[in-house]
Length: 205
Image (cartoon, rainbow, N blue to C red; front, side):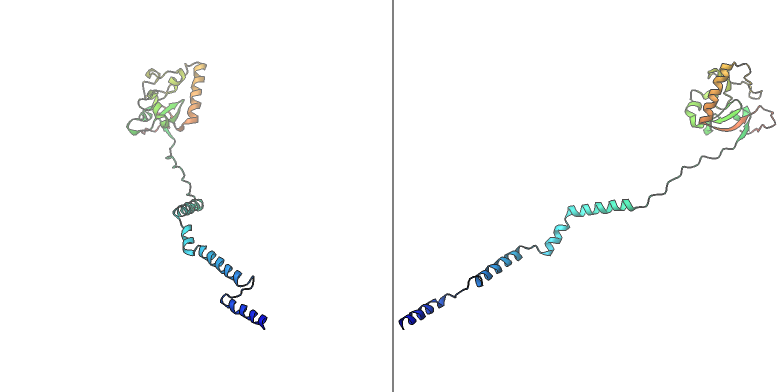
């Protein structure tokens, strides 16, 4: 009887502290604590969205959108150069050619062996104040052949016959042909030169 009583006393004394089985309630309590701590450390959605839309990201996004726009923007149609004004081929006499000397906003023409060239593009050379200004509006054939830009190379009488260049030797004529080829490469032929009284003459300034 005493043994049984002692056993009962021991059981009654241990009623103040609950008996826990290994691997059950103790481990469950630890798991709950760990899960609660982990959930508390997770970022919330508002703060995550705010971290995406930072000023730097917005600038980069805007730059990317602008580059895409430039890439996809249709190219502007090419601009064609304006065509030069049409030039009518005409027949000049020395008096009709004379006003085309670059003065009063006139174009610059000169004649070489009966052909009239528009040398306005070379106004700095053949226009007023240029080194070859004496040839503007005149027959420049003899001056070019002789390599002289003096007025003595020009025909004095505009109403007289054209200079035939018959007195020039082969060397000077070869030099003249060289000049003529340069003019053909650079300038437009706008007419031909004939003497006053010629059937094809057009007395137009």
